[in-house]
Length: 145
Length: 114
Image (spheres, one colour):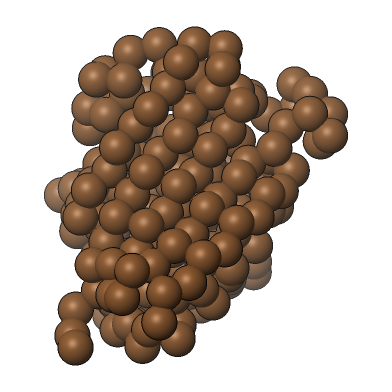
């Protein structure tokens, strides 16, 4: 069965856990392995954390202006996930995707967000425009059937 | 999170999901306790951590550096499979040791605590 869900939430770090739970619930009917659920939750967590920390920058705006949107869709066992923000955008996408690259070392950011997304998902696409926002499109095909 | 100080080892039991939100909280509490203490080593019991992302990796590396500045080590004990996957993938495994149990971690840090 194909399905589709879209939801949005305030860009505060408390909501990252909520986003992971919703995504896990969306894929559960497809009977994924424990490892697949964990991989997808981790990739979503990275994308949402990037939107909150880098897209909007913490504490800089009120919760009403900072929204993260997640669109989920599946075609049979292929999962499509889009995580979007309307934040500052990414200046240099190529650098941002490099392992250990971070613009916020003082926050102990490991610079591994995109590396994790790329390792745990089949494809990761980054669409970003300065001052308009960023969308991360990720795809993963679940094993079996 | 529960923190115990035992000799040279700061022993913390982490619970829940180690994402950006929780990593910030753990960081603040661990640093406050470590700075007040005369501990050299940090032992993190990870058996209650059900999820970790790269924010967790950043938090662990930060605490590893704190221990290293005092000539100590940081050891992770009792990781779940999903947490261990990220530990390996991120390269954290190259700088931070892991043990199956907290007992093994304690002996690695110099034997029974006094």
